[in-house]
Image 1 (tube, rainbow, N blue to C red):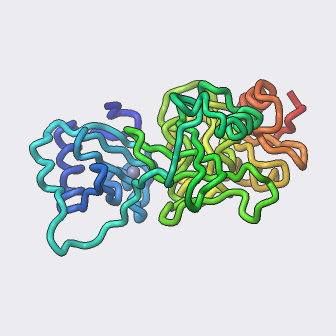
Image 2 (cartoon, protein in one colour; image 1 turned 180 degrees about the vertical axis):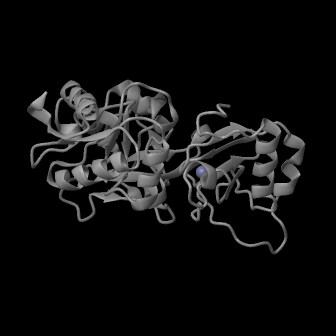
Length: 306
Ligand SMILES: [Zn+2]
């Protein structure tokens, strides 16, 4: 556990105690996760967490906050009894969820050779996601239920808990090309948010869509839409340099977000893509180079300016 990273000077047992107090009496979901307002956000971000950004797994003792980036593991598993659901206690929002009906991974086991999955596999590869990445991030497909005919990209937390997914239809003429499950709180999730917590000299690329993030794996994260205030706070708190790379038609928004991040003390820049282009439709190496350059210059630059 990196205690110094966030300027925290608490001793490990003090942190444990704080986390235990925070989760006392909380409801644990069937996958062993409890959620609460983060007790470290006031110290690390300077404002209270009101959206229950901290998760604790009562089996492993691991906890993390996607808002301020604090993570660690409790030493005293005997205390876990505290967090079993109390009778008539307040109802907590459950964020971990089951995969969609009929979900099948595309890049492992039977999915790799299935004839029926071939169009979906081809689609994913065409969107610039290498097979090995597709396997790692558990991209799948379903032919059943509400998400039938859609490529499923799970939004995974620690221990591969599902916090939601994006379902993109193979047929671009359908009404809702992209669909999310009900109950998924998009504004409070960042696709591949674990990337923000890793130490790296390379900037994180903040994109809109999961396919965009995957095209610059492992450095891409996605807002699954336009960045929300909660996501912006997570970028401020994450400790890595940030290159904002929104779709071509949103380059002004990208520039404004990068300015905001710089104002908050983050080394940040933004990359302007050609008007009809998204990050997953431009060459990967060129985009990564531009991301490095815009952070270096702390400016808004064109994709072709490097
Ligand atoms: Zn926090």
